[in-house]
Length: 443
Image (tube, rainbow, N blue to C red):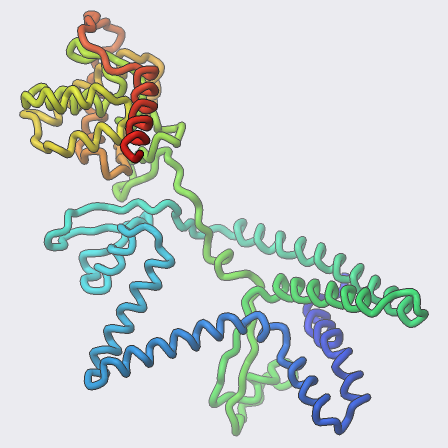
């Protein structure tokens, strides 16, 4: 296998300048041809960046217009423009508005907007903003062992071997096509395509061999800084600054660590011994049955409900004497619809925490398979990542788990059902009827 460090750059330069040298030799002294040659010398990278450069120029022109429109207050406008630019960039990068607001707040008050050891976003001690922790979807895992780096280097060498083989094959194909072109059996287009394949593989090989390349300006360098091997003890100062080209064998993103998607299973908290289980949404099969919107009929206080959130809101409105809202809650099986009905009256019952715990206790007791899943969570804490779920829901779920364990194998009295929630078939008919009625209203 050829040495990638000695081959990467010369091959690329040799192939990229082959056609240009031939044009220069045939048209020496011709001003028009020299202009076309200069355009070719711009290189492929400038063509790729042309669109980006146009966007930058457009942004600069827009900024100048804004500054001219506010002539007389240039400093204020400049600061306002910079602040606005930061906010726009963050909004583009971070689609979650809650995360955007976090970083906007951190600019003004970094002490109140901080980070947890797990890499989540923490808000604490900010006026008019509730304390909370924003759990990010991905977490950063730092490499700590030599085995991790050894594995990265081994993968890099394998990638170099593979790309080197492909490069040698492409180079051999180019030679064959060139020879056949000289004999008249191949077209010029085929030669260009073969040459482009060599260039592409040369660039790919260089990216693997030198994933991180940068320059360093040394203003007062010594001879040994440049001629390290031949003059190791030469300390004379250079009379001019020099640029040093450096590279690192691994990509920084790989060498420092990697981002992993957070598991919905238990995650360690700051305390170390306590663990937290994140309940995301109904699409997550591992935790969906813990979500209050999860659909499974059960009976509570002689009423059959379709989900835990429906039982809570139905019992709350019963206690408040809001029969009209209770009827609306029982007339749907959608958790989101139930929530939209519930916010019409946010008055809490006398003991909201106890009501939640009683409902959860009955729900998991009546479904042994789900009770087993709840019991397997051990001493985990629960955190529901859903803004429509009350903050005390996790604590109530933990309380219901403890009560079920204390109950053991004992059986409870069977609950009679005197009132039932709307069935799935009735729900479907109601949806069709609503669509038809809406259609009639339009016409």
